[in-house]
Length: 399
Ligand code: KG4
Ligand code: ZN
Image 1 (cartoon, rainbow, N blue to C red):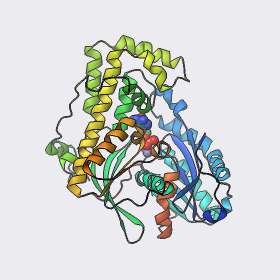
Image 2 (image 1 turned 180 degrees about the horizontal axis):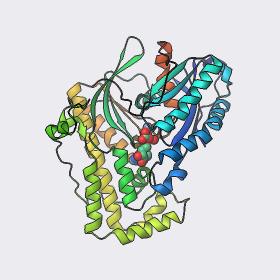
Image 3 (image 1 turned 90 degrees about the vertical axis):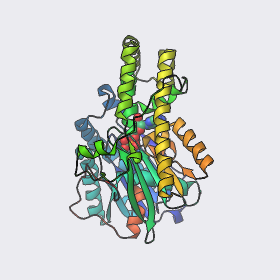
Image 4 (image 1 turned 120 degrees about the vertical axis):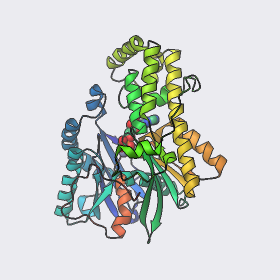
């Protein structure tokens, strides 16, 4: 269990206390956040070790681990914040998107707590949580408000979405979904390419560390232009069919290109050696894998990461210009990537548009972002109905 907690706050900061609960995928998390602005505690029980042997999240195992972890994680969040259940003003929980069984564990527990404590229950969209992770970071660092409208890139293992975000009527947020991936999410591409190259799950942090040791220009990966017609024919009822082709992402092609490179250059035997060496050493860290990669592999990894980051950059900045965004906000697990942060930071500076990221701890899944996103809903008395249930395919905003 990892704990990230701000210093114990004076009592006057213990107002508007929201307990956030997140269980949408492979992290059981609970956090106490004061008035949507300051983390008093944030506890994350990661299931990486459970899913690593399978190279991805196994839904049934995820539900079982959430069941095992939810009570100790909530207890640790309360203890870390130095508060009791009675001190809480509301309970917030992720209602979707995510794995149905995993979401249900958090929702059922949150509902029970809210009922027993006679406190309001607030349902939070996980994607809105990722956006509020950045706003929480801004509050905690006294960075001042972001200029609106803000263009948010939510880039994680399950999502690559662009939202135009603005507030309406006080603190209530409104989102317009202006871009998305038509196939794999960017984080999924990191994970699949890592697996292909014999690196552990989740692959993003391994690729991030190894890419720094290779030549990003060695392998020229290209992204095909997405034809709007081809995309629309996939599903005529598609909610996103109206999106412009240049705000659509596609990451399945680059994964296939890496596979082809591996086959053409006969890298499979070396990959098996690497996979076996890492499997024999479960405590290996990403940098330990540098010695297990030859120059060609390091160059391939650096080129893959560079191509993905450049593609995210190009489309995000094009959308920012098209929609007249006054600031940029980048969140989700892939926002932890160092090349992405540095490339987006320099491009933003060159274009004179402010860009904000969450801390690395707030970028990947956590419950502090859920409690922070719940705050404007608490103020607006937007409480969940008694029948709240898991919404595995929940979307955010309007197209
Ligand atoms: O937001 P998150 O924790 O969970 C989802 O909502 O999906 O994101 C997890 C994803 C994984 O695909 C992981 O490989 C990726 O974020 N990730 C990274 C990095 N750290 C995590 N990708 C690239 N570079 C990183 N440093
Ligand atoms: Zn997430």
